[in-house]
Amino acid sequence: MEVSCKATAKQFLNLSVQPRNLSALLVQALPKLMCLRPTLHKKFSIDPPPMDATLPELPQDILMDIFTLLEIPDLVRAASVCHSWCSAYTSLCNLGQYKQSQTPCLFYTCGTDSESDARLYNLVEKRSYKLTLPEPPIRSRYLIGSSNGWLVTADDRSEMHLLNPITMEQIALPSVITLQSVAPILDETGAVYKYNFWNRATSPPRTYALDELRMYLHRKAFVFYDTSAKRYIVVLIHNPEGQLSFAWLGDDKWTLLPTPKGIFHFHDCVYMDDLLYAVASRGEIFAFNLRGPIVTKKLIVDRAKNYICENIYIVKAPCGDLLQVWRLEDDTVYDDVDDATHENHTGKIDIFKVDTTAEKLVKINSLDDHVLVLGHNQSLCLSAEEYPQLKANCVYFTDDHELYIFGWKNNRRDIGVFDLENNSTEELVSPQLWSNWPPPIWVTPALTELCPTKVPPYPTPASTFQFYLPASLRAAYIFFCITIISAYLISWCSIL
Image (cartoon, rainbow, N blue to C red; front, side, top):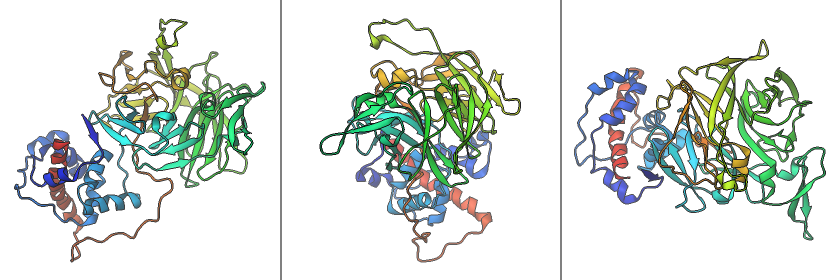
């Protein structure tokens, strides 16, 4: 079922006359409010409100407390119900009080939509949400990364942007001509119309059209938050030879990181304890400190194998451990002449714990109650207890082979769920929802603004009297309020 993020005024007017049984939503809300075991919730049954029920005027701080319990799709629905709920939603976001963990969604485009439309497939609800994104059209862009709710895209001039598909905020990153391997070629008016690009450090440059460079330059990008500097940083893996460059948000140029001797092609990055950890194609892991006047690096783990792995990842586990993951392909039969017959299939996934003391990798055979989310996104390791809708000891993956991400636009995408216990793969959803271009990518929805506006003063309740509750009654009152709010949310779901 596909749901538009905008509902009509007529639908909202119908909410007050379409009450529904509240038990379904209470089953979701009670564990967070009352810390009850799930098996106890079935005992609760609340009669629906009368047919002439009207929307209550709830104190804004109470509304904000309730809204913090909702995942983003329900939060956006609630914000669209009326002005006071929208005001509570806005205040919640502006004050940075919305911290609810979000389940990763699959970001993709659909052949029947316009060039600027995209969809989010929600793993919790097993439904898709349609989004209309700002220019340039999403189908004209390359998706080169996703982390912390932000997509990193390259437009038809090969310039990069950050895009939040939930808030629609978009931020231009430093120009590609500030990368050391790229030089602009100007026309008679002084405008850039082509690029010279040193695709190999020891070879002369080649000339590329504006929209052609992105196919050969960009590899993978990340958005990280440095807790000490209290700033966002963008890290880019790019050619030649999988080098690393970075830019703090607000910088006007990219800074190249020193590539250690003998290292060929970085594949993945993670930011932990204010250090950038990067893994190279033979399993080497380096830690970079980007915050000083001079960038420093340290070898954490040396070469783990003598051959190059096409898909290798580094990820932080919830307990704080570092994991290195190797994703291996099955042998696939295809026609050497026809590129369209090429298919990539995940055949095996090996997982290692990084022992930083012994400086070695230790193979582990099971994730136990954890889940990996891999692809062209920032690699994630999540607790299945915190995300019960995800399957424990499984890997949710999307295609991220360079040929399929940047070259072959019409080939089958390798997307699915890999069970580590029996080394089997199942489809994420069937039939396939997505177009093959741009390749689908995992994104974790977020309401974070990288360039926030001035925070308004904390709003007071709309009522003419001050509303105070002792702490002992607050949970009970929230329980009462959420039963009323549930009626509107459930009614809304039934008509969308």
